[in-house]
Image (cartoon, rainbow, N blue to C red):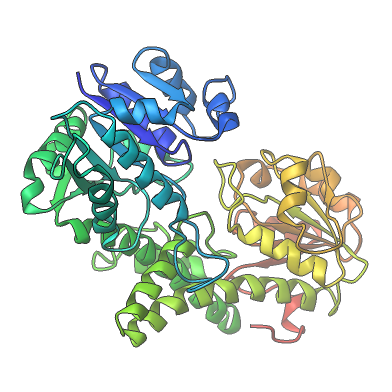
Length: 473
């Protein structure tokens, strides 16, 4: 029986291993983490990750062949295959701050694997698999750490092999993406053919062979960053076009639909929805990591190209805030502005890098009273996310409470309930003129204008009221 251990019980490690356990009932899968509260959450009825279908997958496997444990050393030592799936955030300080990935958690995990390997039975080996988003050549650094620790310890050099197996699922559709992936990428050297085959055999339990893509080690590492960068580029491209649509009277939905039907562009309408900006834990981080890698190799023009993908995203968020302020007679000071939605997209509980957080901070900094409602984010998290501004937000129990007495209403997450609100009731409770700023194009602007709202929608022909406002694009 193969034993698998994953270091890191976060958004990638937990769902990935749960699906692997579901599809490989003869394989023992352990997910380990040094955070006892996180492990306790995985062993409870309220998982730390909000993903449709994940509860059912975990319940089907937990206690059978899926274990969540804080006993990291024991499970790593027992495993044949060790996945490393830890956080690699952008560095906040020091060399490369704001651009380079922080590999502190990754190196700590590498040393845990090395220590465990030195205690394993003589003659046994391990396959170590990168699952985190890491810079190119990180696997080689992992090999050096392992070699330095285990040579002469009874396990010996050459008894481990390091592979790259990046994850590509999207938050909100993780289970579906894991059960039916577009591709599984496994990277290794020519000398790692046996290890690559062993990992491919695990995935072959449910993934068709033609969707298991084997590459070189460095190519697999770069593929993860490239995929994130190209998706982010797609979003920034359509958002840059949305500004021009507003200035010219064109409709970004028409433009995106026509462009998305071009087979050379591909993917249909995926990532061609204009909005207030992309968010989440990976896109911005991966684009900046890619830019930093280009910079480190002297590819300054390439680095600047990728930095502009992030710059356009920041521009779009700032442009939205400026539009709100300019539309409301040039000031929001002392005015109540309701914000509907704080997570970066519907179906998740994640507010990391959410554009809605930045919009809240921008409005607060300009003197607005901001009232926030999100159906899945608690008051503590909302206050933590917006704490960078001294003025506290108000936290509402529902959308109607958030909008009561407000001068403006910002829709910043595409939750279905925001599409079906009783906007007559919302209008009756708001100040006049009542503004709606749709950052996700989820409301029917025509219907809202008939009710009496002044409506701004990203990339759409402008409300007559807004035509006389100062240009802010």
